[in-house]
Length: 248
Image 1 (tube, one colour):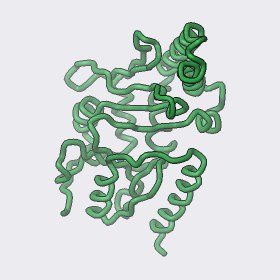
Image 2 (cartoon, one colour):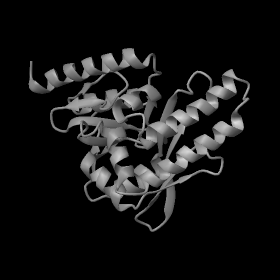
Image 3 (cartoon, rainbow, N blue to C red):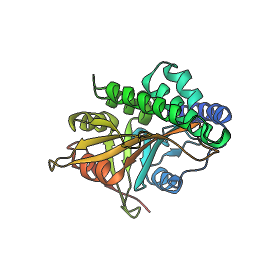
């Protein structure tokens, strides 16, 4: 067995263990793009829900993205406690938002005012943390790369599966860092948004962090991105980005 195939098997084993811990998760619509990318670059699709998506001989571990609204990560609060600790601002924000929605669903919203105020306070603390010491980029590294596990981002949004934009994750994180990301709490108080400065000079909201509000998913926190701003306007304009054809 070659080294990279053995690495694929090990990654699949890790994902299998994670899957059993977090429960059933819907397959992402981007799975087809992952398969197309893997076939085109002699890669192997890694099963499961954590990053990366594909392992290739040339580019190593690759995260494949192709949706207009990207779900960069979906974590249950128990995983955040395990990974980051219960006192981490991201964890505390997720727990406070979860408690607000659980009260709405299971307790007829008897404590909504108090829990909304608590969630707003935790989100304010999260934004303060995100806006200092390059913490947003550090959190993005955790979300997109499993703290360095992913080597490349494969951007297939709007390409009709004919080509792909390849950018090393180091360049992706550096581009976001240089875009001067600014986090803020949305007016309703239950979501944190992050804007970036594009090469054009415009500032756009590119990322959001929020707990899912429906009854079955309120234990999960989403880390989302807008492809138009994050991929098309920022990363594709980075000097480290390369456009490659997809072999069909």
